[in-house]
Length: 409
Image 1: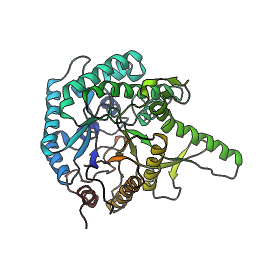
Image 2: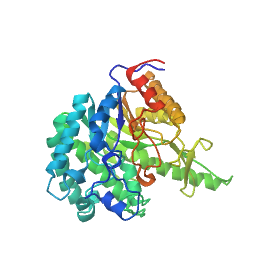
Image 3: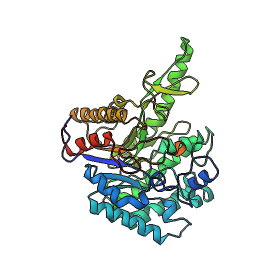
Image 4: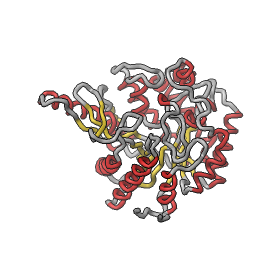
């Protein structure tokens, strides 16, 4: 078991919808009501059990935690904040501090107030993004800034744009390849705006980009199929990587399908380059996606967890964004086979250790998730937690504690 620096951050990550259930005034609640996803109910009960959860996390050395403060709870109606919800989240943050947990707050994790996303046009509307979103970000900083350790404003911009405007898996449920680039541009701009506003509070601000290595795949020996697959793989790579890397490195927002935009103030933005990692992917000439490696074990989410890919992601980030600091903001394994999860977790953490040994500035590892919770279209059928819904530790939790507290078997 590799040693880690004493100041390395060990933590966990979760979202409001998944741990507290969908907010009644959110677009995702309406999505559930329409039968487009399983009911999230009360998530995993975090809204009631947050105090004991924080004490549990701390006892395992997981002293950083990312949660989302749900916009649709604190501002269910435009311009009207819910005092009870604000008090509740204040109690959550104070309980975390008392337990020794450093909280990173996410402002948007796949769900939005219906009044913003449906009535005002959401992030794609320039006025809604520039006024209502900016107003909310400012309000969040002023209201909760003294109680947080840091901010991770928008969870997985590419995944959100893809699920909402290309694949139809999240609100607004569109499958329009012409709308997807516009959505991706808008969410990148919203993320940048949040960084710009929150940085004045003196707390670190990190991205959460969903990243995967992408490899072309073929089903025949046809050379034209390989050429097409390679072109599709480059397109996927541009969406997942290049669109935002060029912005943060060069000040150029390069969303495939749209003209490049020079936005100099985006260069050098964010204190940490945080990302989620779950798997690599094979893409085919018909734009189909499959697991990578092709013979790897596939989990219930339909992809193959591949720890080696985490090392590949870290090295690519180090090469393309020299001098930057990185966070594994989300890494987890959806399975009811905890022996497999434990093996994958060990191998993934060792990939981070290898990156550190190579001089890559990795500041922390956040496991997705601490307690089994709701997993969107999969409901409660897939377990990602180190602890079950009754807060019983799994073997993977013991492994996480060994690393986080530098203990040995």
